Amino acid sequence: MTRFITSSFSHLILLIGILIMVVPVWMIFASSTHTSSMINMNGLQILLGDSFYENYLRVLLYQGGFFKEITALKMFFNSFIMATGVAILSVVTSLMAAYALVYYRIKYATLLFWIIFITILVPLELRIFPTYSVMAELNLVNSYFGLIVPISASAIATLFFRQFYKTVPDELLESAKLDGANTWRFFVDFLIPLSKTMIVAMLIFMFVFGYNQYLWPLLVTTSEQYWTVVMGLKMMSGSIVHRFAFVMMSMVPPILIIIVLQKYFIKGVFQDK
Amino acid sequence: MSFLDLKNVTKIYPNGTKAVHETSLSVDEGEFMVFVGPSGCGKSTLLRMVAGLEDITEGDINLDGKLINEVDPSERDVAMVFQNYALYPHMNVYNNLAYGLKNRGIDKETIEQKVNDAAKLLQISDYLQRKPSMLSGGQRQRVAMGRAIVRNPKIFLFDEPLSNLDAKLRIQMRLEIKKLQQKVGVTSIFVTHDQVEAMTLADRLAVINNGIIEQLGTPIEIYDNPKSLFVAGFIGSPQMNFLDGNIKNKTLSAEGFEIKDIDSDFEGEVKLGIRPEHLSQRENSLINLKVDLVEQLGSDNLVYGQLKDKKDFCYRCPGNLTIEKGADLSLNIENNKYYIFDKSTGKRVN
Image 1 (cartoon, rainbow over the protein chains, first blue to last red):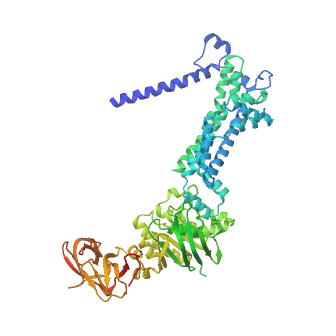
Image 2 (cartoon, rainbow over the protein chains, first blue to last red):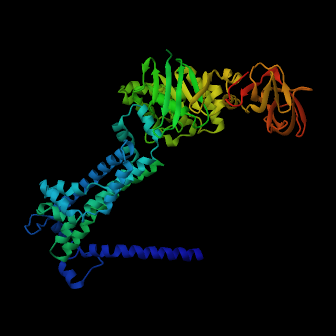
Image 3 (cartoon, rainbow over the protein chains, first blue to last red):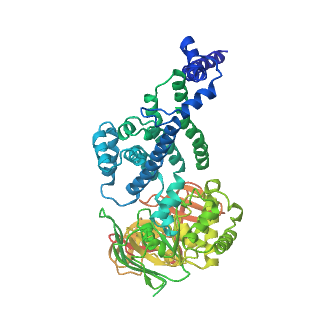
């Protein structure tokens, strides 16, 4: 009986937690399916309305911005390019950096690694002017390249891969060497497959990181053509339901990427066991 | 020149540790050579230098008439079985075996043929599609061997491959390795710290201590005729008994008994070595043993007891003899099989 009470109690707490998280999101979603006059008169709604298609289509295709050059669809495209670019580029560079740090006979490799790691303490906001001026010198303002590259060196991902490589037994490398694998083959045939799960985790992490960027895209783009979703959230004007609809849609890509890649992530975890 | 030739090979690690001292050794084609010694004696380092996994500080290694000091491990055409097998965890057994062949640019059909042949030989054909994590210790061991065999290398190197197996499996695999090596006929070097493994597997064995080969020979030569205190103590189970003694005028006195007319001109402090199995009970003999403990192994009894000052003196007798604790035994050294070593240098003097 006491067990029933304690377990009900803990379930109750969990349920409250879920409600606290889900209800605001749901209310925004429900409200975004009504007409704006309805919201203006009656406030936020709990029940679904019947203007879903109308509102969402309008938001996606409406020519916005000061010069009417950008649609939400284009922003999603930009954000997707940027987030994917950041994710792939940072995973590739970290994989290679960690490989060099662990497997090559580099003098002061540990010191070098900690110097890389310390860059975590220097956020983008601190180095934003020099970074911007480099991008401007290179004529990379208003380009995907300029959006992606300066935030694509990840010390955290390098740390994760480095720590993982250090757990790979030396005998594996030696055995591969005797089997005729050169340094490149060892990297491609062994380290990459073995760190598959970690690569997926880092891809998710860096995708969300890239997607959520606000300050950097704001600075490095002057053309509305390169606006991203997160910038759009701030820039958006228009009726409240359309803004709600945009907010709802802006949550979709990160959730989608987690759902899609989680399958591989879990698969990898089970295979390793 | 023999098949594998080591000439004055020395290994000094960057931190100054000298792991191998000017070692010279030749291994004939098809021979099964065993390196045996306590841990940290340099036997694995020596093996790894042959494989190319350690740089050679000084000296030359020739394999099949070719100097291989500077040759990359992948080009040496050697195969190695590691202590932890080092199977590729993300590849199935088939790919584990095939990987080395693929890297050599061999065509697919030949690879399949070779892998299947090796799998058949090692009786792992049923597991080819499994990952190493789904195999038992013995099966993994076989896969590791298969990976070596399939490449048809000039030489097999085994780095304590049996030490991760349980006792029963170890004996079984030991037998299989020996059989396999005789069947395939590949020159092999086997590193172990287990003297039973060394004795049973070797055509010849090298007893290594502190980076030096103390003695090189067939197992029986080394057992019958150990050249130093270390070799005498290391080879043979249970261990040889050592007694402190003194030689004067060809008479050795030790622990309350004397041996006259010994075959040595040495004078001074010595260690007398007697193997437990070279003793027998006879009335009025040299050695008087007061029995403390009897270990019954079934086929044999190991009798431990005290001489004058020496404790845990071991005598091995047939299992059908009943010996009581506290008994006084009179023991004779059969055929005068005893060994005398210079106490200061450890060298054999008789």
